[in-house]
Length: 140
Image (cartoon, rainbow, N blue to C red; front, side, top):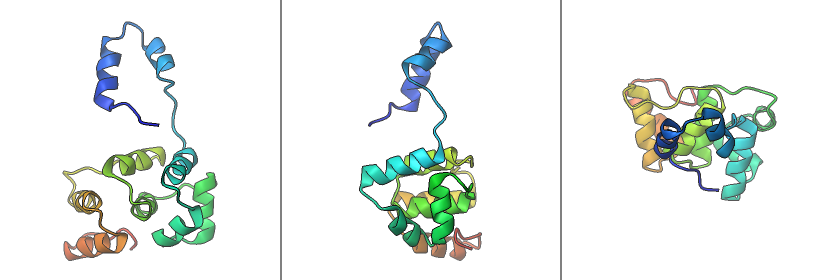
């Protein structure tokens, strides 16, 4: 399901006489992390064990993230984003669903991560780039 652009929704909200009607019309709800992860798996035809393995996350901990039993760190979410080859927009949605700050281009570390995501780099390549710039890697 294609989501409307945030800018378009904002303009519609600002023009709306009633915020409750706007929220009802667009079925605005807080997206849970497990629901969003499952949506991404379904859209891409991916399997959870393979994604967790490619992300370099302990299988038990990975399972607990996917079912909502554990709250992952921002780095763990980034590891999952790289493993699923998410776009920047999808990565930021994943971070938001996990209760973490979105990637911010004015932050040196985040800028490197954004660059790597945008260029389809692997998690390993992103970590190498971060290390080369003397900032914390994702997998530490």
